[in-house]
Length: 163
Image (cartoon, rainbow, N blue to C red; front, side):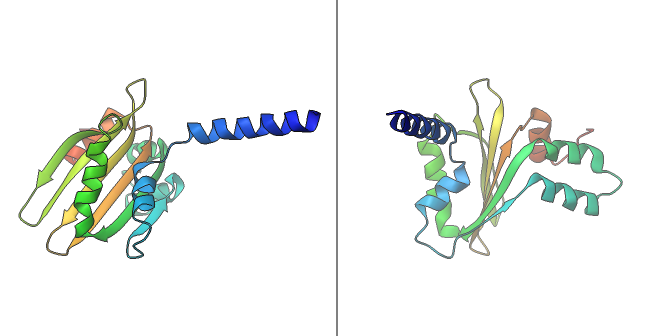
């Protein structure tokens, strides 16, 4: 009897943990497109990002390294440009979860930024869709973590953290 109760308790705890962990956009997109082996996804940890920044910007690293330290993960998905609409549709179908923030368009490229906020209103996920029409390539960059307004301004305006 005690074993059964313990087993049920453990199963309930595991279900609670699984329910709290939600898929980020890249994971969800990869699940939907799992049949296509040409779609690639790589995950970059914050420590890997920090090492890259230190090597490339040794004199200006402090603010950028501090911002990267707030991130949990970054996933980069690459696919054929045909998947752009599928990715955008997935984001817009989930309006309650993701919000369109900005978009851009040039002669040969276009894209959009989407964010997900937690119940406190803090940005916890940033998704950038980018289609290079000339190369026929889609790139999705999915960042999760503590994404503050300063970080978003840096990305959107391509300015340093001090400006």
